Image (tube, rainbow, N blue to C red; front, side):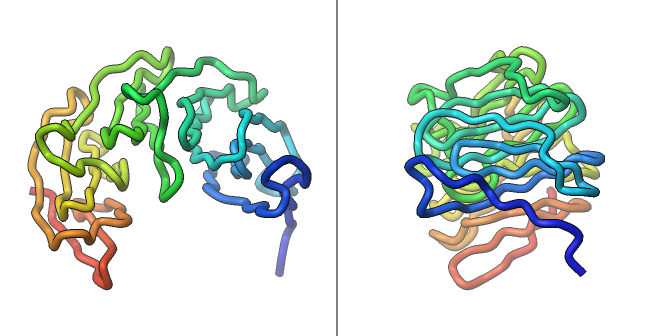
Length: 216
C-alpha cells in the first residue's frame, strides 16, 4: 500500500525529463534530487520541508549525515546544506576542472567529519565536512590512467576505507584519513560500472558480471 507520493516540480529546461533520483534517508527525512535541485521530505507524510536548487540543467547526488546534507552537482560544485533549513553552509569546486561527476551513480558519501566526492578529474576528493577544505585527492590519473569513474563507496562496518573503481579494470581501496592506497584489484578491463561495500566485501558490477572482492 502506497503511503505517499512526491511529484517533482514542473518547469525549467529539464521539464521534459523530470527524474526523481539519488534518494537518501536520514532519520525522519528523505532527500531526493531532481535536476540540480534537492527536496527534503518528511519520511512519514511526504510533506515538503525545504527545497534547494542550483542553476543549470544537470543532475545531482546527495548524502545525508546528521545536521548536514552534502550535494554533488554534475559538472558543478560540492555543496553542504543545513539539514534543518536547506540553507547552504559552503560551496567548493572539485579538482582542477572545478566539477563533480554525478552523472552516473552516487558521487558523494559522508562519514564522520569528512565527505568524499568523485570529481570530473577522475579522483576521489576528501573534504572537511564542516568547512569544505580539501584533505586529499586520489588516485592520480597521471599514474593510473582511468582512475575513479565509479564510487566513492564506504563500508559501514569499516568507514576507514574508501573504495572506487575505474574502466581500466581496477578497484582501489584508499585510506579514508590520508588517501594512501591500501590495495588495488585488477579485474577484467572495462567492467567497473557500480560498486557497494559491506562487511569486508566489495561488490563490483559491470560488463555482464558481478564480482565480490575481499578487503585485503
